[in-house]
Length: 208
Image 1 (tube, rainbow, N blue to C red):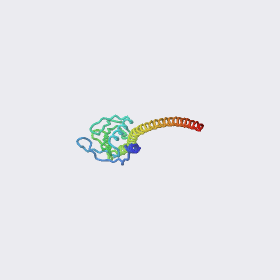
Image 2 (cartoon, one colour):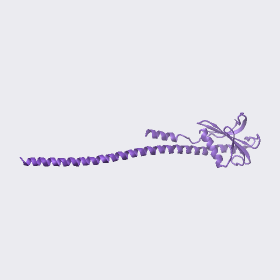
Image 3 (cartoon, helix red, strand yellow):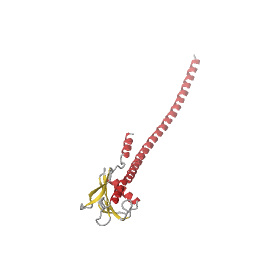
Image 4 (cartoon, one colour):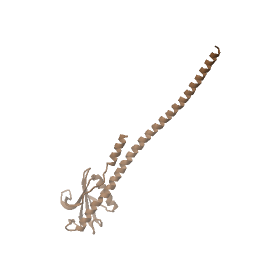
C-alpha cells in the first residue's frame, strides 16, 4: 500500500503546470555561429522535451509547417499568421533548456535580415510576446497528458494488486468454507459416536 501511494504521488508530480515570466525582447544567438539577433524570449518551468512538443502541437493546430534550420531552431517560412504578424513573415522558434526549465525564443523576419524589434514594429513585437505567453496552455496540455499517462500506469498497478488480493481472499474464503463444512461433518460424527457410547453404557447399566 505504501508503494502504491508513493507511486501515485510521483505520478501527480511528474509534470507541473506552466508558470511563465513575461516575454521579453533580447539579443539572442540566432545560429550555430552565435550571431546575435533581436528576438523575444520567455521561460517556462517545464522540461525542454515537453516544451518542444507543445510548440509542435501549436504549430500543427495552427496549420504551420516548419523545417529545422539548426539545432533547436524551427523556421516557418513565408507564413500568413495574424497571431504574430499582420502581413506575411518568417517566424523562427528556438527552444533551449534542461529537464527543469526551458526558454522559448521567437525571431520574426520580414525579409532577409530584417528582424522585428519593438523599435521598428511595435505591433508585431507585442503580438509575438503574446504568442509566446499563450504557449502556456499548450505546455499545460502536454503536462496533463503526461500526468494522465502516468496515472493510467498507477491505476493499472492498483488494479493488478487488487485483483491479486481479491483472488487470494476468494481462495481463502473457499478454503475456510471447506474447513467449516468438514468441521460440521466431524462434529456430526463425534456426536454419533458419543450417542453410540452412551447407548453402550446404558446397556451395561441394565446388567447391573
